[in-house]
Length: 163
Image (tube, one colour):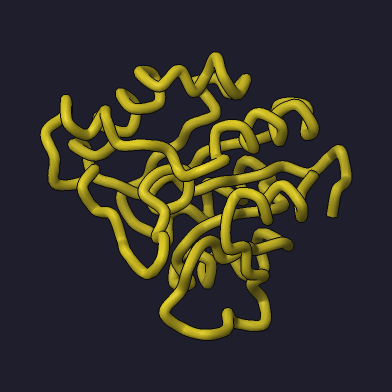
């Protein structure tokens, strides 16, 4: 699992930013103005862990997010204004967007993703047979994930599992 040829894919919403904490889902990024959305904090430990992942996997780390045009613009702005590229070593061409959740799977196939972290079972279900290692991130309403998904509660657990 810690193979240096691995390629890591990470969802943005409710994973890197606005993670569910103590049963509370923060959706303020979606409903806020652009300026207000830029103030939304990163999930605790996400930026630091992504930086370590980028270094460990020699840059083979990608953000893959499903969203519409407005949220895509906010996401790109948030990544820039929070200096995510400088802080983690990611480049802008390692950030990919799609309009439908199921469309993350072909992006993962094309990028050769071997590990994917997402907060939604329905997204991960489209990747079964495409991405060998699927991780269900954050607090979930169901008590246990499907057999094909490994739970990761927070970024500390991401680091422990993937580094």
